[in-house]
Image (cartoon, rainbow, N blue to C red):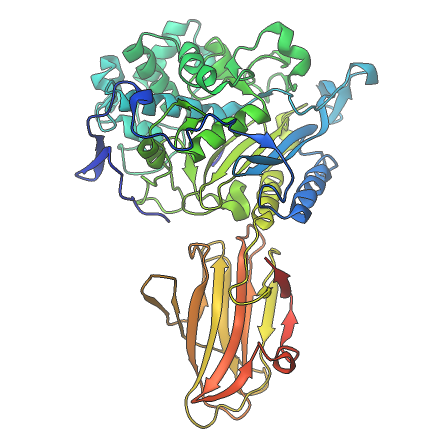
Length: 591
């Protein structure tokens, strides 16, 4: 089921060549295992359980991650967001958090008259476990995308080739110009969804895809559509001569040892699978009763459970193995499933023409609506309608898996993506920011719908040029959350922005003429300088303002100093001066 809802195009590496705004792979080995020198190909296990400290994470935010997740087991605001979930968070090769909460199976039915769930007897309810298997829903699209990129490496598919060059019937109804890249980046022009399950046979469902007209010309808009990945499935099966479930097993899950990841899990798995929905009309397209152990998505179910857009079942650990493999450039131990430059392409924004809809090959990028403060221009991930999410942040080498059964007992009980955002915020918070110059730095916090200020004492800047300097680190939701340097010459009645300049290590100076910083700064410290207005009692402050929706990792300030000539009017390194700073919402934090 369609799940609603920067970095510019980067250098593509050794194996890819830019061609007229598109991309084509240069000659690559037919076998990805024969590719260039392996990254981390030392044969060690890809993952291990360990402490937060061993992962280079702060333990406090990870504890809060669990507490936040457990809050969504309660009415939020009217019904629980999920009956239960499995949470997994890690950094490097260490899984520092692997926690089941709530119930995998709780309800046997949904009572629409009372809007309540009919619970199983207590002895038939099943708690979540670390290895509970979930219907991934649209997270399945990532597997289809990886399989497609593998075939691009092997020369069986070309990224810029028309889909109709592989499937001539696909070119009907004006689709002759849709390319493989359009399918992978949701820019084909397909509408979001059509009810394929109403067609009586598999062949007729395929014909409906071929006969479907586009909502707009290819490449002119971003429109998320299940039909893109269903079409890609048809291409993959045509060029390889293998079904998608066979490709998944032979090309991804077996090489990576992902033993709990597959289409159509056997009946013996059912006690370890999280239940989904009491599927009945009118809220479902099909009358199926409690869906448990079979794919929830109606179209995937009607396609025999094997579909490019949905149908994969997996558990948190297997998804962490996949995450680690991609963060390691496509290699797990001694097994390689992708070349590093192919992974780079999957994490590269092809949708620069559609700001806010950043998308690599299969992966969504920089989406605060579920990535929360983990979102960066290179953060990649996907969500699933059943309540699932996978997020990878190459910048901090961290990964997050949130698997919830949020359509159990019915899809209308949950809305939005608050549990995913809360978990991502806490994992981002768990990655420490080392102070630039001492043992502590000022931190703005990460509260939404908030204003935090950090003010210097009144200073006499009336004679000569006074210059403020400090180290600055910021990562905010672009445009929505803003850090402002401002000054007041009338005791705080009115404030004016103070233009400043920043320079990152090894980089050029960047002017901030409006006195503001917002968005992504690379998560590195920048040196800041600003000339201050002349006034006998000038107050200078940092003001950090967030909106009510999403936040970034926040802002840090360290080593504040104001000099006039050789005279220091203020120096945070002097205890007496530091004591005169006025902080509202800001706090001192160690790295």
